[in-house]
Length: 484
Ligand SMILES: NC(=O)C1=CN([C@@H]2O[C@H](COP(=O)(O)OP(=O)(O)OC[C@H]3O[C@@H](n4cnc5c(N)ncnc54)[C@H](OP(=O)(O)O)[C@@H]3O)[C@@H](O)[C@H]2O)C=CC1
Ligand SMILES: O=C(CO)[C@H](O)[C@H](O)COP(=O)(O)O
Image (cartoon, rainbow, N blue to C red; front, top):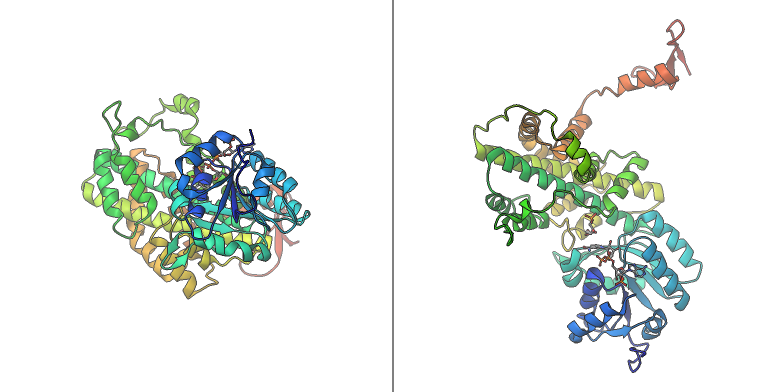
């Protein structure tokens, strides 16, 4: 039976392909906006049927084949794909290209590795169809109520898409959380870095929890109250808020805290690793994001953890003289490390924009992250202010507000990292953020010695502090210096 038979075709002004958690909620969000009629299609028809049955109010136009989907859309067609990243996205793009026409727009709203988006945009453009890679953040709730949206693609496609995306995006201080990030893969690039920062933020919060729990012996429910309190101050953010919720949750089966029965192996779908790979290839030291990504990897090697379980650690953990003061230290260390994570993330975006010829407005990026997305936070207002005051800011953490906050928090930060080290509690994101801060502010770095070593074994040469040029010491000869 053709389940689409009987529906009016060509009337939907927008379509959604892929009706899992993100696609279904985005389709409902679109349908709830004045003037929209939304066509929906999913590879497995069950999802389409379920969505229709559960949300008759949305007035969806269902399609059970890509041909039917194309026919249900008014021309020029606009469709948003929300399917699994990778091969599934390629398969859906190929299928839509077969049934769409020049001038139509295909939007990939899923997470995609930006080089894939650049490749797809180029290939689809050849057919005369517009392709837009748009990062969408906010999870299930954001997709439904208003996500933060990071579209790339052409100016022409943005003319059509802009009003639709503005109508469904979250709103922060009266501004929709969407902006045309830049051409081809720019949108997915920025979404990738958003997720890298998300990894760092989550890891820092997890380390804060672990330090407090192991240091003070407080229960998860008690620590939830600490996070709830922090959420009323400068750390106010969605991730802090949901952390309190998770820590408060009791497990029905054991009667204890849910967090204690969740297997301690963190999953990852790839965006953190993409950010780190990209940062490495751009030469940007995104060390906090890297540590957060590696911390998930370390957690997910049970065989290695079992092999290391008997290795010695500190015999006696240092006692905390003042647990309340320690908790305040952790709060300050978390804020300082968070500044580092965001500063590094914005560095990756700046370097990526330069490398790929994108003109990315970093202030606009910070503004569209203020609501709707997973890293939404009060803090983003401070970043927006920093870029408004100095759009060409070379280093976010050197902006007056952040420099002052780091200066205020650095003593507590050091105490926390020292305590973690002394107690044998892993705090890789806290420690690496502090090392990054100290590395940046150091008058002189041991990189000079590294250069000497490189010159010794590979005649790689070095530059001198006292005169221009490149030099090499004749290490295996008379050790005199020559200019090269
Ligand atoms: N979940 C989240 O919080 C967020 C997810 N994203 C991104 O949004 C996208 C959608 O995420 P989510 O809703 O979680 O869904 P999933 O990533 O779990 O993907 C499931 C969807 O992909 C479809 N699919 C899988 N393989 C194929 C294929 N070969 N051909 C056609 N369709 C296929 C499924 O169809 P079928 O029903 O037939 O299996 C289903 O509709 C992903 O790219 C994800 O990375 C972005 C932000 C947040
Ligand atoms: O994009 C997202 C949020 O912004 C997705 O939730 C993504 O799946 C999170 O990444 P991971 O699964 O690797 O933790």
